[in-house]
Length: 199
Image 1: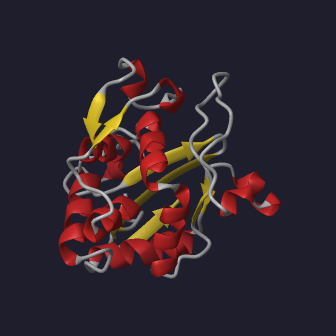
Image 2: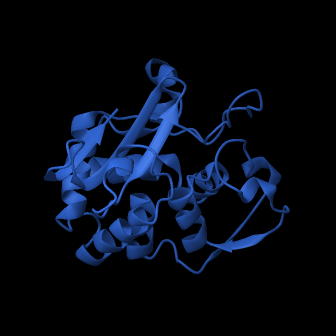
């Protein structure tokens, strides 16, 4: 999401440009775009919203195809979070995996193969979220818009389930043996902080 906001700010992408849903983009897992017909035209803005709000894996692949995993990594370098790497596109889940594609330069390194989609650390997520809350990610306006998108994220089984009366701007996620919830503003104990990452 951050890399898309940067691309739009720099003029190399436009929120209203259309992306075309292709069979090769579709993967199993969360989201609904895989259920739609090939050839469907979607605005970049809508695909980004699907990627975050319903964790749509197909939308993620469409964004990586358009923006590239290398652009994501370059944007993370800008904020000093150099262990946070996008490695490749989503393969899917369960028994319906696709061949790996969309590799970044980092994703092609043998030592990073074990990380799958990507890598990060708790500290780096905290750093990025602090910058987001302070309005330092892309721009103040972009940071506010990204937080607004995160507030609409629909999976609240993580930290958000305990914070009914609080605003929650977060992005949950999971892998085989990992459940995570990242958000600016409130930490796991419910006390206010600039950012928190928990597993």
